[in-house]
Length: 130
Picture 1 (tube, rainbow, N blue to C red):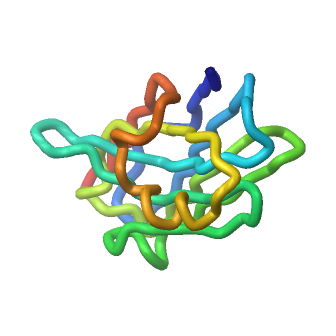
Picture 2 (cartoon, rainbow, N blue to C red):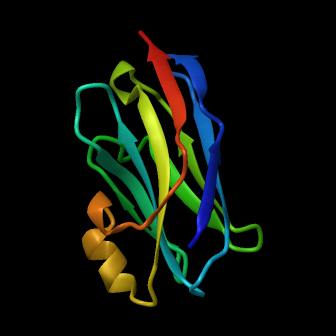
């Protein structure tokens, strides 16, 4: 099973930026669907951004398009989430998740569905003050 460790969370004022990183080890596949999810208190878990490591195809929730950028460094097995123009409503615990797959289309269809991911990090808190 893949081990995932997130870092980079913190507190920032609205309009600011943060960069999250997810370091992975123990990959069982040459390609993976890597996704950042978030969950705020009292709200459902939400898929924020995903990337298929085999082609670097990216996927975003409408709420973060144009503000967040997901990227992959295959040499370092690290998935990053650059978050700009942060809003109060971005406040949440952010989790990295991984699913091994050689099928880019599968990732494009299911990246936002947390139930299909078997590997999760411990989470990192992002707090945006208005």
